Image 1: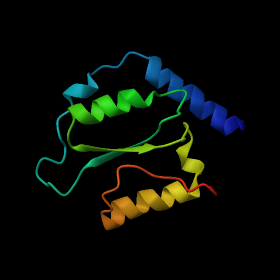
Image 2 (image 1 turned 90 degrees about the vertical axis):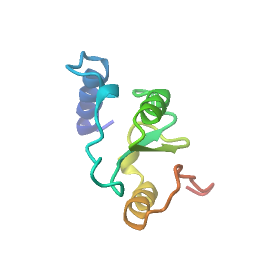
Image 3 (image 1 turned 120 degrees about the vertical axis):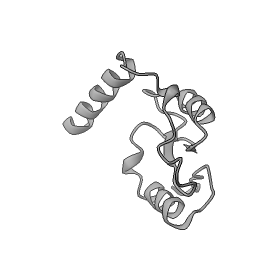
Image 4 (image 1 turned 60 degrees about the horizontal axis):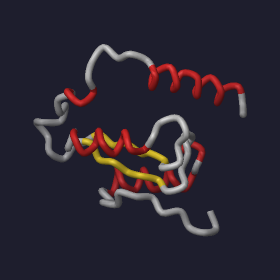
Length: 106
């Protein structure tokens, strides 16, 4: 693991396990004036640091969040160039897919 990756993992663990000053489930929709906007969560279902069940739960409670689950994805989704293509396609073209399906040759 590169030093930069290690520092990122440490910061993520501090955030996930720390005390927050607010309840994320009480967040109001910042896009309430524009129905065409939303927040997106891309979550690997094999992430060892942030359980995907948490993101599923939050996105069900906050309907303005679009949840995208990545099968076999871990914590460092940013390093998958094909995932970036799927994210851009979803955001720019409005592809309604909620799940990135890796091909067997990935």
